[in-house]
Amino acid sequence: MRKASILVIEDEAKIRTLLRNVLENDGYEVIESQSGDGVVDLLASRPIALITLDIQLGRENGLDLARRIRRVSSVPIIMVTGQDDVIDRVVGLEIGADDYITKPFHVREVIARVRSVLRRTGGTPDTHHDSDESERYLFDGLTAVPDRLEIIDREGNDSSLTSGDFKLLTVFLERPKRVLSRDQLMDLTGGQDWSPLDRTIDNQVARLRKKIERRPSEPGLIKTVRGVGYTLACEVEVVHPSGSSTKSA
Image (cartoon, rainbow, N blue to C red; front, side):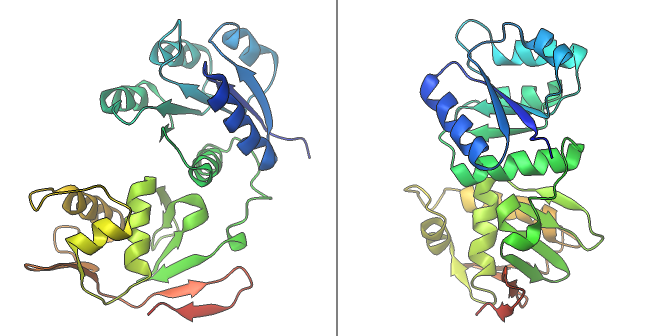
């Protein structure tokens, strides 16, 4: 089977090389470019399964390049952004980008997002990326797939989470029915120093509820323990790559 080709557009050589190594190690063919020069012609001359595109290119804004690409192609685009580029991320998604990765990124997140976007868009067969190769968490009719940063809902539809939100979900899945304070949740997710007025965890919990609750306005899974924190109020089964399963405790 021919390898899927991914175009990495990044002006910083170190990051470009990192992305190339990560993607090649996962079985993709990688084409590198440090600018948008020739990208439109390249798309017309050969099949490209996906593009990773840095927003902060040297001579050209990545958003402008994404607009140019979208005029001629529907190839999936994952924007690579800085931590403070919130507005750019929103604009990128509005332009037609399929997802984004925030610098500094983790190798596992890159692979998970690439696999997820390709699977959603039909950009490449997914035969060597079977979900049985990694652990899965089963809870309340849902399946959490860490390798893909995804939730499969009760109807079999999947949706992606950010790496931060999935990390928070994993903390709950590994400690079901235990009450966790906001301090504990910040520590367990590797959060930053925070004050009692910080709403980071509350905001993340609200986002998670929209993904996993039957009725987010009346949460029954992630319950609020007034004055303390939160608890995941269900049993969790962990399915291992071997096919065996255990209960989280």
